[in-house]
Amino acid sequence: MPKKQVRVAVGVILEGDRVFISLRETRLHQGGKWEFPGGKCEENETPAQALVRELHEETGIKVNTAVPFMQIEHDYGDKAVCLEVFLVRDFSDQPHGREGQQSQWVPLTSLPEYPFPQANKAIIEKLLGKK
Ligand SMILES: Nc1nc2c([nH]c(=O)n2[C@@H]2O[C@H](COP(=O)(O)OP(=O)(O)OP(=O)(O)O)[C@@H](O)[C@H]2O)c(=O)[nH]1
Ligand SMILES: [Mg+2]
Figure (cartoon, rainbow, N blue to C red):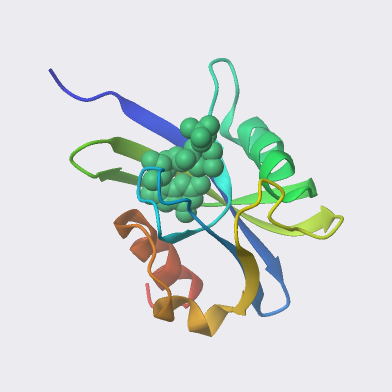
């Protein structure tokens, strides 16, 4: 039976040339890797609505404007995802690891130094203008 694809809203939170990233807990899918905050869309929720909810839950920010950036379909073998990626430059309050996750602001150009899930490769390439 084909795997059901999970739709995920992902936020690239930007301030100048820095981006906010979080470490995925070891017990989670793709655990131990860095991520852009976000999570699964609930039923009857648009990706933009899911983004606002997840970013508030995970980082404490209030998203004022989210700009659609790209869509990525990826099959990890154990799980197939469709990432709906948004750029978030316009937000209120300072993002932090609200669920206890390790988080930090890093320069955009340093993203290739961090281990991310495979699906994120395309996001990072596009952010760095390589595609
Ligand atoms: N948030 C997030 N998820 C990502 C990224 N890249 C990527 O492949 N994923 C995958 O997208 C899926 C959704 O992630 P999630 O664990 O954040 O979902 P969630 O916040 O709703 O978590 P929950 O199930 O604990 O409620 C995971 O399978 C994760 O591996 C990313 O940059 N950020
Ligand atoms: Mg999440």
